[in-house]
Image (cartoon, rainbow, N blue to C red):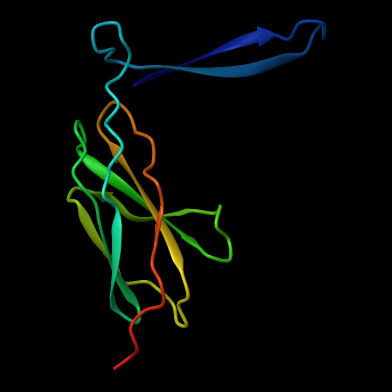
Length: 131
């Protein structure tokens, strides 16, 4: 991806300038823009232990990796990236804190050209009892 910047004078405010950064894709898929991977489907979460949940989803057409995000029930709109660039279709989230009540997960497919739209979220319930 190539980035370039251009200075522009804001209309009506003489002498005031702003830096505007514009992005251009280095590959344009034949003039139609970047190829965006499909939204992953089948997102599911299953408890493994009191501090681990297994998250899985179906492979997405055009994806080379996936971005997984998690939110707390107490802050349902604040998602945090977990797991980095995941190349498979599952991930074990071993960073849950006790007492766990509920987390929301969503996943997006990515490739070298673009990131796709996030899936619908899925939630885990209470984890199994500690052994």
